[in-house]
Image (cartoon, rainbow, N blue to C red; front, side, top):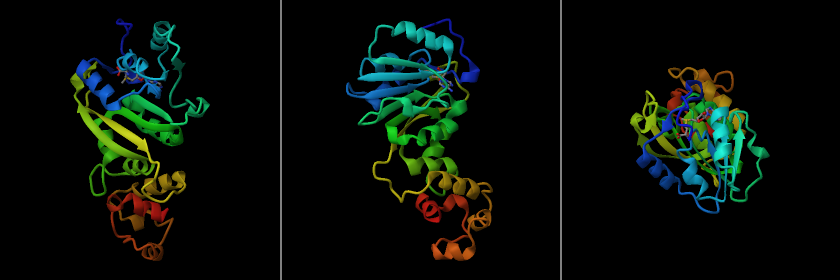
Length: 256
Ligand code: SAM
């Protein structure tokens, strides 16, 4: 596809060129003929060709008009391919035809929008069966971190509230052109069918967690003093003198 295309930094374009890594991603994703897939940011089609031939239907969402035009030409005759030339952050997934088993998402994501994009996807997770993404290694480590770990924070708690998080494997910068400055990793996020803790208002949970982590060095009781006092911490049997990174997802849900 468009070999003369010049990678656009503003769209986070680092194209996958390592065929072994591409194969490994496809194998770990394991598309099936009955699957309805959505690829975010297909770029020059490194994953797309292998997906379209192994699924029931593939929707792709690409912001870059030049790349989108190439896809329209390339898959003109494919009857199981739909192109959305759109900004995924503004894309309303509810406008897609609902699928009984849920859509399966895949993407080598633009790293500059990864956190807002994950929150956008969590908000409509009921539409998705699973999501396999390439992200900056640091972000994957944050998604998968456990309490006490230095990477544990708002992203870990919110991701683990919505999904089971599995870090699959790391990908070096040499797998891309142009090469990113950071290491990358593949993560699988599977929205819980049976959540590991009680269901709460996720917007409230997010405010609570954001407030708790606003000053990492402070105790939770101090950071959350506008929301609850010592006696309320005591009533919940949670020691308010602990630091925010030591509280588990269940404990944040209990406070919420
Ligand atoms: N999938 C390709 C690959 O692996 O070689 C390209 C991956 S590249 C890291 C990210 C892709 O996401 C680019 O094609 C870029 O144009 C697209 N993209 C960036 N921001 C986007 C947005 N807001 N909405 C939709 N696509 C976006």
